[in-house]
Length: 160
Image (cartoon, rainbow, N blue to C red; front, top):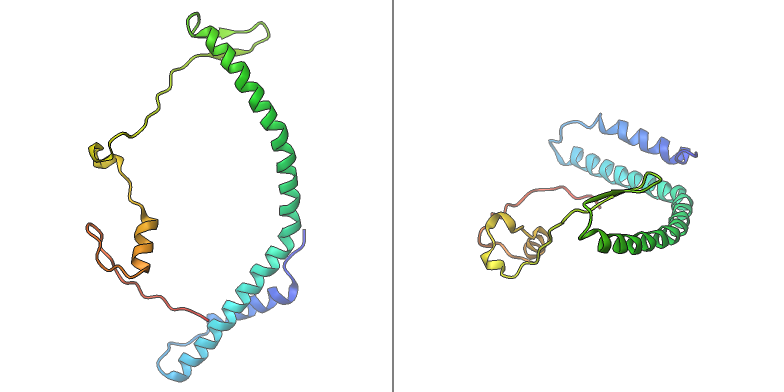
């Protein structure tokens, strides 16, 4: 297995070590140096990720091909299992709860319950979930007041 490109790895380690030596920022000069270091650290991180993705691509492609081949076989087996289960279930429904075959196979019936919501308003609150994706999208679009939601501003430093 290959490691990361040595130049990229060495650059990343050197820059990460420099981060430990950043002084407290108390003027524009130290802010400028820290800003530039952030830029270099971000670029190094991007280079490491690109290097990793480049090395990983052939492995992912081989895994994808293997998954596709196996899926063709398992899909066929799943269809066969479902067909036999259907026939077994039809017979056992009125005759057996469990059954053991001559060669050790064992089947059993169990009753599963499923549901369909017919009146959302009638559901108890414990069965309703919050759509965080929709709330975040509304806030990103400019919403600053949503009933039942506390919107809090958080500060984050961006690096470009």
